Image 1 (cartoon, rainbow, N blue to C red):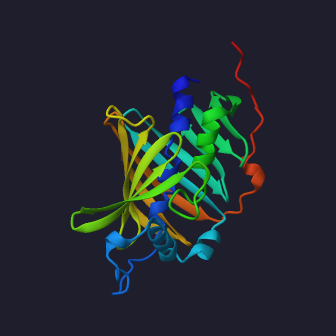
Image 2: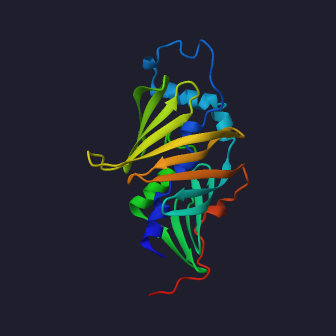
Image 3: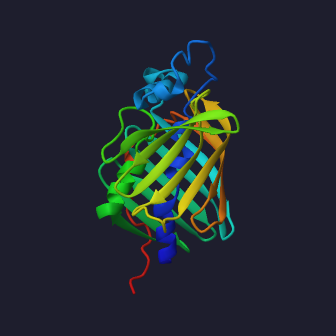
Length: 266
């Protein structure tokens, strides 16, 4: 199992599968919506509309867990994945390649990775900064819903007009990255986001994600196709083929697994 495989699972765009910016249900119409100028809106105003458009906090909290099945294609590889999420911050991801797979999990406190190749596996804990990153990525609702999570700062940068549509631009900063989320002022869905890994300077390269084919599942909206332009300029497509809301996931699903057939020690 190569170091490249281990790095791949750490960088998988978990939030692109379940982005908070697309958690909006209907186009909000009516004269009262923009009674105030867009420039007068605050971050709390925008985030409240994201929640309201999706039925409100109570409806969102009724979604306890979710299962996503899909596939990823890029110029260098293609693979299937299964993503499991459970409130408030449990996550398990399984990436399946030809004759090998990578799993990554977080149980709310501890993180782990399992590498499997030719029927043999190796499990190791996630520690240090990688564990902090995993905790941030495991937040069920993402950065644009709720009161926010530890180590995440949010700011409303302003409004940008794109093809005659106004978008709120929300900056989300963690100790490791900086992202700009573009939220449609009509629907409160996310059109796209830009993300930079820190340190951010003139040499920083950004990853851009675009969200398409939004479909409603219970109380949430999911982008069934995410197109990403990676930092090196290559393109990647994530497709969601199946979504299951509240599938009854047990907490132990996210626990660190035991090695079943360990890789030989070199």
